[in-house]
Length: 202
Image (cartoon, rainbow, N blue to C red; front, side, top):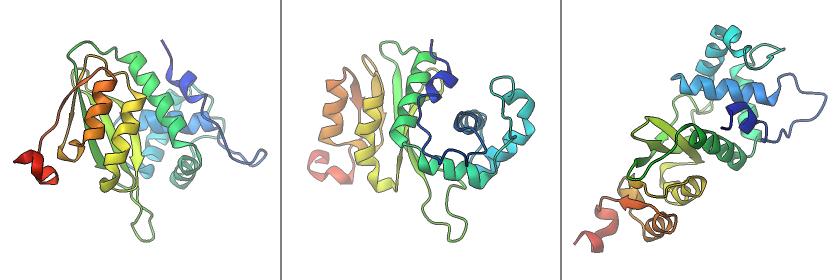
């Protein structure tokens, strides 16, 4: 079984050598464990780190302590999203073995506190795959806004093993390409029909 740290170690660090204070693996591990614990936004992730530093050091050194919320945000802006998504999804699926007939719900959510402080713009919108039986997120893909979910959903499906599973998505996911992607990967789908597919709705 893959450990979270093993999977995160494959993510490349593009920061300039010699000017790095906090190890990339420390920041990634901090952020994921904080979000799993219910934190939302960079400031809450930093607070979690200070409160749980002794626990975090059971797994990684954190020699420079906990980075600031701004540092955490900057680091997540420079890593390759696809590398992060792939490593996280692979770890989650190693922890959560899906069985035939399991339901995977795909949905989008704008992260609280992820906007830029000066003008409160550019919030992070995530499309997530949620395993209903195990109550865990199997994978996520970042989009610029909700309207981009249509292109993000196929990217998320590419990260997952959905053979024998039932995929549910809201009406925005009722698209021919998305349905075909699910079937091609061995899954089934349940998609509501609304006004965005007027001919099909009739």
